[in-house]
Length: 309
Image (cartoon, rainbow, N blue to C red; front, side):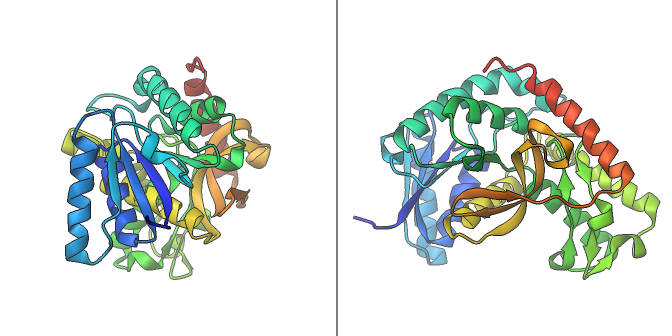
């Protein structure tokens, strides 16, 4: 019997399967992939296990339609829910995905009461509220993946724009995971050089706008939501917790006064480690960034107001 710790990924769609695949390649934990669709998680798990023979990691992915195999998970990633289709806003998904996330949360917490929950389902900020309320877990153990993805998009565009390695681009994206997200350009650098010294203000504005609409750009091209970058972003958060990396990553955290926002899930830089979301870090914002963040908070409150949970 394996002595490795366990990570559960709920939802064997594109995002969940990608997350499971990236985690399997990291090779430090067993992965359970859960989905209500019969055959889907089992088939994807089998495929990911067989990829291990090619890439050189141990086949330890189990597909399941229930939650028995998930018992004792250290971390549970929740990707379940309907993806966006063209013309659909994130907020259109609220009522449908609220029911799904509520049901999933109840079942995973019953099987793994000590787990840390990482929510990926959209609309992300609202679904974090659902998972927290339903689970009754402290805020350190329920948080969401959005900022890593948003930041990855901004970093990609800035690397292309400046002809630099994406490894040298440092950026922070705050706020709700939607069109009102706030790219903190005052804290964005390329190789330590402020990006404003390298790219004209007007062009930066265009890239910030493209980042905010980044999810929609993919939906319009593919006809469904992105999955490679979101799946990898969720796996990066799992790594930080499982390996106690204490990494500072942009996460959707429950704020209680930080950034002047209270009782709301918002994207902020946070330290992730074995205890989950261990600390929210406050970056200095200029006046326009502060105003944009307040506006983003209002937009998130509007969506959260639709919830019944």
